[in-house]
Length: 395
Image (spheres, helix red, strand yellow):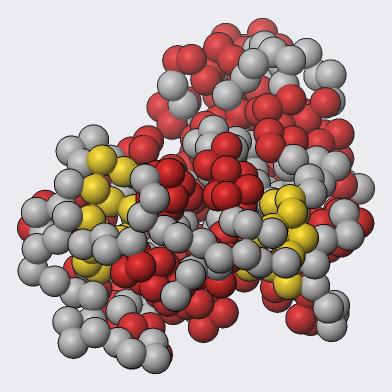
């Protein structure tokens, strides 16, 4: 392990932890397992010990010993059983930027060869197939063929004003493919000139970042930027909050970027999307990477309230305090059981509102929540906000 994986700011912030354990109180993994070793407080305490064991003066005067291989592996298992939801950061009274610290810690563990083997799979899949699932990247836009009336160009144009960046989950999972199918109908209804990148779209890099592979991002970033420029596009729209956050924080700002909730809200405000009445009561789940990660809470709610007849009821935990769905941080690949236990708490809270459905704005949230409800045969639907807008299109 090496201190070089951490910024000077992160190393200083480590010492700001007061061990108040508020991060443990709000951690979805701790709540699901009752295991305090999954908390941010435990992680910070162990990391401080590790970093001090590397320092010559600490070893010499205080007898600090480096962790054994088995101890490091055990610590790694706790580090990767985290959804990177950011709620610990939101509640930290010391203002520690915990999410960035967890990403640096994962990179440190990768460089120390103490990480889950699934990390190798993520690295190999993205490098070889340009998507995290090792699917044929030439099939990224195959969902278009399932449309009732697919256009001749298949939404792949030489030039367009807007690029719709689909994301790996929506491109390949049948349950999530309903989202790009719905979005194409919404953008057509608003007469938006948009194109897909199809096989020229590569994974945004977010799974690499979350796996601790931050130094493997460069090729994907450079390729995607060039693919967008080749289309002559001024805007890139994302239905995936993780892709959106990745572009906000790690890509050069050469084009305008919008999460789809921001873009659709603009279209509604401009009168380009006439909406009919829907008799429906919904609750809204704030995706971690859109809410806490990108500070976008209002656009989705403004869209829901703009649809005649739709009633919005909030969950007990909403906006910056929203409970994670269990689908983030590559947790589903690392510990599928824990991911499902976190999803249970989310669905239980959503159903307590009395809503007919939970609306979110993330394909992974839709997939995680619907996987849980279908597995347990619950009559409760999770749908993306794009699907809700499609239902309300006044044809």
